[in-house]
Length: 489
Ligand code: FCB
Image 1 (tube, rainbow, N blue to C red):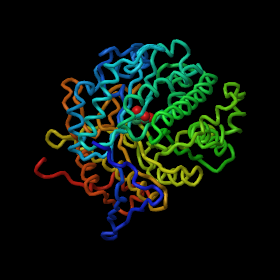
Image 2 (image 1 turned 60 degrees about the horizontal axis):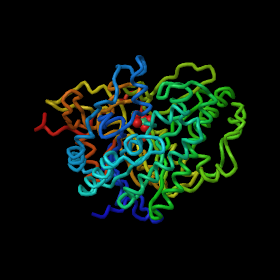
Image 3 (image 1 turned 45 degrees about the horizontal axis):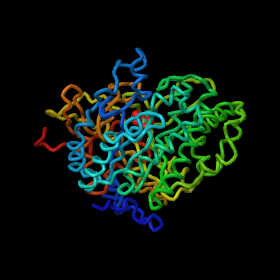
Image 4 (image 1 turned 120 degrees about the horizontal axis):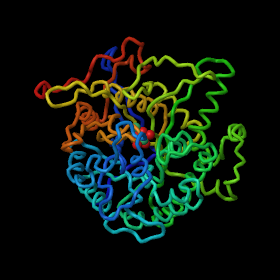
């Protein structure tokens, strides 16, 4: 089966339309061919940690150290997706997804350094891609979502330049096998988090804590992206290449020069550090200098490899961060999620416009957006997650506004399809549209899954007009405007 075109023609990208129903509720229609989907990643859902020749990843190792994961859990079983993928694709089809973003485990494809491709491992993704296409869902694979082979970490991981070349080899092996059916390849997921949480704060695998390692890792990750992108282009000239970056809106708490300087540094480190080298602008010079980074890892030609133009920028957005020079706690005006991440939808729209104004990528896609919520209320058997619906609706509305302002956003993928292994939070941070019972592995769509499904089928959202500005404080949470089907109550 031929994949559906996932972009349409971006240059003639039609904007959505607004139909105002009355003073309070607006219906926002999305452009035709807008891509609606959901995202997951290998380590977070697959389980089968040692099946079919898979080797150990840094996350397998990290989870084995007591204290690293809040609930002491690991990814050994996770959602059991490795076995249940057929069932899961059927569920995606029921929800009406047009695209599914998943990641490929390097440790399944190339379990040993410099070794042969593991047929059984790549065979899993081969079958998954076929199953998705059969269901009319566009596969949207990411080559690296943080599960580095431990054997590479033993040689320095992302602080070793060789890892970037090893990644290009792994990309090549994967594209050779799946490139006939995959239209868009994403190289990396969130290099900021890989470098920052993995090598500076240590809260993620491999748990290192060094600024030098962070800076080196950030460069080799971007180099890995560039090298892989070259290989993809030579093997599959028609393929589109993407990278997924996470962005956090950074705002200064006050207008004081100190707070502004702090916000600028943080914005440079979290946001501009990745998007600017990719856009051919190099690393933010002032912050690099402040950190005393001599850039000795950046060899001649590296920045050119890194800035090989991408076809699509994937954007992951969850929260904003209001910073002050003295680190004082800030009021979170629209509330927080269950993981205490500030909810601030207007920042999302602002960010999307900024990215378009400053970098002018040919196409943007929201590759992750979602919220961990307490999920305590039920209607019968189903989780009544009106709070998650509100989060999604407000953020999707911002996407719509950005499209109206001419930002070429081609799709929106909700994080996540399932409750899953939320890294250092283990199974305590629940982002799923679909609840997973981690004992029985039963999947039960939450109310948000039904809501998202109705958004997909109508290609529109309804939203109280006040919510477009974020709404005054006392409207959070707003009255539900998507009510459960009384028959399922
Ligand atoms: C992103 C990750 C994703 C998930 C969400 C909540 O940073 O890419 O795997 O953990 O956060």
